[in-house]
Image 1 (cartoon, helix red, strand yellow):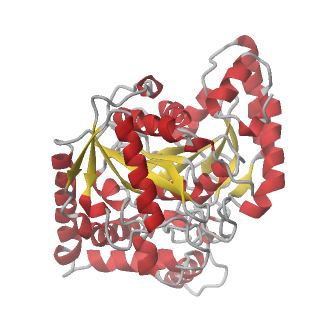
Image 2: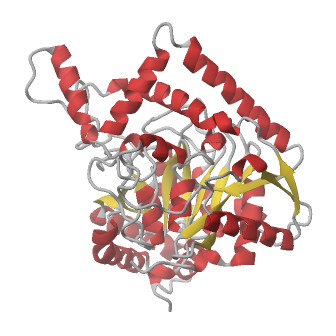
Image 3: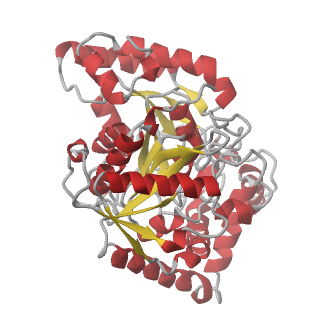
Length: 487
């Protein structure tokens, strides 16, 4: 039998269901892998070994009785530390929540538990999901398994690095401006940002409420579809949750793209795009043509305004959402203060890191009296124009194909002191969040020095089935979801 940590979710499911291996054995294999590899990668903030083994025992009981067995029963998962887990520390990568233990589970955690999945631990991230490199974590940076001197991307850097380093079978991340797709590209794994409203946000600690969405990170497209099956669906506790029937997304993983039209947005192939990235992306598009897809050029004319629009809307929502961290009800409270206002100021000054403070100040300014119309209102109007661009493009094509990021993974420390350059690393992913459409990153090549490159596929609202079909065909054509680093 192959090494257990090298098997995909559906391969593990097959041997678990046949009882060729136990969930306890699989879980111990992953816990051993974490012990051996994660000290170099540092993807985990909290490892929940005791809980994982207890869940594995329960999974084995289910498997023995063939009772309520699903494709995720007995599958070890990693969870981004922005998702509330009952009785397990949830820090959001911030000192202000260093000792916060939620009294409840996020909806998606309830879903995973109902499926019999196993939680190995909580994964590192940029503080409150604000960043593109996982260097903004208050605890430590995470390293890219392909090159330990480089970033895994962010903010879901721990989620992508854990899958790439095979310290979990699959993971969950969140995506506000590219935080699933960009790290998936940098780490050579598959990452899906679903349509806004497809996955419940109840129990997701908010950064920007109109942009945040939970999604899966996996080794291949089939695993991605299985995870999406488990976590999607309407939730009454989330007012933005869409009331839609859940499909079995694995049913759309069929070969051939004869009836598909692929749109290539000309605004995404710009000066500054790394030559290796451009070459790999164009090679992937040719591979999709070989699978039967028709290719047309389309235009998304307001793309140039996306980054500026995002960095008004997202910080404005963040300044409102993070107002609750004041040291009163939960989280950090400094010990030495003179009065209530002094406690507020010292708690927030010491509890938040530099990037979070920067975005709170930007957001508060853009919402302040006299500036709301000039900034936030105008950004909301441009957001509507960006959404219309996508709708017009999808009148001509089924799926858009473009780079995920302008470059492959950059070196740790390279951009941390230059916020603008860091923000621009999300230039191709931000428009998807502003429009609320789904996007996926699928491995499409390697740079000349062996770093992964991802192709971004985008579709209309609630068209995840189309995304997965095209992604699956690219995987068949290129076979790059089987490349793994050896950290």
